[in-house]
Structures are given as C-alpha cells and as structure tokens.
Image (cartoon, rainbow, N blue to C red):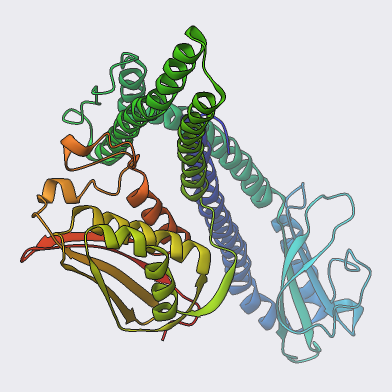
Length: 457
C-alpha cells in the first residue's frame, strides 16, 4: 500500500476512535432510552397509586359522576395524560374507546403502548384491574402517558451525540496526523542523511547514535547493506583488473608475435610455429572466457540438471587416470578412501575434483601421496583432497576460493594457470547445494567441497 505513513496512521486513529465512539454512543443512547422509559413507567405507577384507591371506593353511579369530573380535571389540555375506565356497565366507564379501536377489556395488566392518531410517538399505558364492589362491576383502569416529550429528549441527545462524535473523530484524525508527522521526524532526518551521502565514497555510513531505538535497527541494516555493496564493488573492481590482466598477457603475446612475423619474411615452417603459438594463446583466452561464463551462471543461481546415480569412488578413479601425466611429472601417487552412491552431475564432479587434484599436485612435495577422501553425512557427500606441502596461513585459506586469488604471489601469474580452478570448485558445490572448505594443519593442506545428493548413502 503506497501513500503517506502519517496519513495512514491518522486514518487508523480515526477508525479506532470511530469504533470506540460508536460503541460508547450506542451504550449511552440505550442507557438514556431505558432511563426515559423508567421515568414514564414511574409516572404511570405514581398516578395509579393515587387513583386506584379512589376508584376502588366509588361503588355507586352517583359517586361516579364526581369521579368523572375529577378525571376531567386531571387530564391536561394537550392530553399528554389520558384516563380510561372500561367495564361492562357504561355507568362505570370513562374516556370512550381506545385510540387504536381495539377492545382493551381483556388485555393483561401491566405496561404497553398504543398508537395515537395525530401523534408521531406512541402512548405508554398502564392497565390495572379494579375488583367489583357493591353495585359496581369489575373495571379496567388505564392511564396513558404521551411519550413524545421523552422521545424528543432522546432524539436531541442522539443528534448531539452524533455531531459530537463526528467532530471528535475529525479532531482525532487531524491530531493523529500531526502526532504521526511529529513522530516520524527522525525518519525524515534519516532519509535526508541517506540522501546526503556523497556519491563515490563507499565508506560513508549513516549515524545511528542519535536515532531512536526503533530506527537504529533499520539504520544498522542499511549500513550493513552499504558494507556489502562496498565489498561487492571492491571485489568487482579486483575482478575486472584480474580479467584485464589475464587477457592482456595472451593478447600482448599475440600482437607481439604477429608484428615480429610481419616485420620479416618467414618460411612456411616458421609461420606454422607462429600460428601454433598463437593458437595456444587463443585457447588460453577461450578457456578463461568459458570459465568466466560458467562462474557467472553458477552465481546467478543456476543448478545442476544432468543428474545421475554414480559411485564417487569409480568417478574419482577415472579422474585420477585422466590426470596421470600431471602426477607423473612429480612422481606423485593418489589414494582414494571411501565410497558412496550419489545422484549428482557426473561432468561437474569430474571438473571440480580434477581442479582440486591439479591444485594439490602443483604444490605437493615431490614423490608424496595425495589423498582423496569420500565421506557421507546424511544427504551430504563430502569430497576432500589432501597433500603434503608448505603450510598456508588462515588469512589465505579464507580467500583461496575467490577468483584469481593465489596465496603465492610469486606464482600468481603462471602461464599455465589463470586462478579460476578453486572458484570453479565452489561454483560446482553451489550448483549442488553444497559448500567448500579448506584447512592446513600437521603438514597437510586439505581442500574440499560437499554435494547435496538426492540419494547419498
């Protein structure tokens, strides 16, 4: 949801107040209505308590003439209060027919309402039965009270309540917006601080000391993102420099050799040698480009797809046979320990293991033994290659799997190797959901990787 946070907070404040006010107003109105109804019933009860004994003692028609006059005197001109006496003998009746035209002589005693023509509000009635006495039969005494003044009070209260509630909601919304704007001041200051960071200076960070606790975590996360961006930028710059350097050497060789060949006449054999040398340089450049494309695909989240069930011991033997010439030069032997059946990409496994063995052979002590260990950890297949050699500092171990990184600066620009072998091992591990590791202790240097298999056992 887009929009101002202050406006959304103000709207939420207004909605909350509207809900609370609506519930409170409803309860207040119901309470007032009940109170007004109680007042009407109390007034009806009071009139009955005064008149019921009078009606009970009038037991002859002569006395009822005076009673009718008394009831006429008690009836106000606006007929806010009315009286009826209903009985079988007309001599003991008063008030005429009921306003709704119904027979109320059989209605139960108690409170009820009746619609009165010409009035917007009903009339509340209280019915009491007066027992027969002397010549007077049993009669029903009804006192009616117009509810219009009471309901007008309720209506006026309701209107006032609605207007007050609406005004309160508006004021709360405005006040909530101002409070939200004031409360979000640190956010705006943080935004201005972020916008003021100078471009090109990757070491600048946000000042988190003066921020409220709620924003410190956000600022720390943002600074962490800046730090990661700085590290990625430095790595990218180093990568670009390394790629340029690696490609510049073969290009320089090609250009120099071609210029020399064009400067003097050459026979066919000399031109063939030149083309052969150029081809070697071009193949080296092609290898670098292909390796970089492979690494780019792995880092973009590409996964191994050509999966098959293989025996790691058998595949490792094939890799060692392929590298026999490399091992023969330094009279190295290879021992393979362990075995497991896994579901992996066979081609990628050969490539990563070959890179590890070549790396071990390059720095191993002549006539020593290289050990390939195959260990299973649940669904993880762990492959490691160990060789006897000079110890490697921990500072270098953490970076040996980076592109073009070499611990030995004197051999960092070897013509035969361009420094992507261990990076490819890490890419293969990543494509199989695994990781890489390296450690150096007790005269042995160990490099390895793990693979997540669908059926490692």
